[in-house]
Every structure is written in C-alpha cells, then in structure tokens.
Image (cartoon, rainbow, N blue to C red; front, side, top):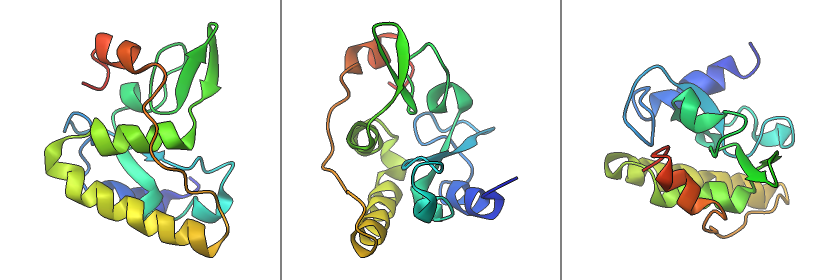
Length: 133
C-alpha cells in the first residue's frame, strides 16, 4: 500500500483515534490530497486519523468532498483546514495545530499554496447530519 509508513505515523500522532470523534478503526486522511500534492503524500503531518464516514464517503458531506448540485467535488484545502482547526476534538487540537504549522513549512519550501482557513460552504449539512459535530 502506498504511503503506508506515513499513514501509520500520521495516525499514531492521535493514538489511532479519529480526530473528530475519538473512535478507533480509522483511515489515514490526507489534508492535501496525495494524488494532487505528491510532495506532501508521505509527510505524516499531512495525514490525520479519521473514521471512514468522516473521511471519504461519496454522496454525503465529508472531509474529502462537498456536494454541489448533487455532484461530489473535492473539498478545497482551505475548508479542510477550517474543519481541522474547528471541528476536531479539543484533546487533539494542539497536535493538529502543530501538524498544520509543519505542513505550512513544507508548502512554503516547495511553493505550494497554503491558504487561510475557510468555513465550509456546507457547514450546516455537516452539523445537521451529525457527521462531524
């Protein structure tokens, strides 16, 4: 499996528990998608432990996708950042902010855009479905 070592290291930073719910049995979710940002694909700080339901489920609001007119669109990095900074468990917030700063250093060193956090356009749907609240 590609990125396996980085996935293990990224998930271990929260003891293998979902950053949104604290549950175990998680995926390693890339903040900057691995396919689009290959330089960040194996950076453990770019990988966050998430339950599959919160990470990547087509047809529903999640970390990876936002729906626009019934079509799944890859969620913008700025919205993902806001979710990490605002919807995660308090006990992981310090670790998450540290990981975000480290990814920022990588982005700066490699001329990758590092946007400010932006509240998700589907925030109400995320909360209403109790997906990340």
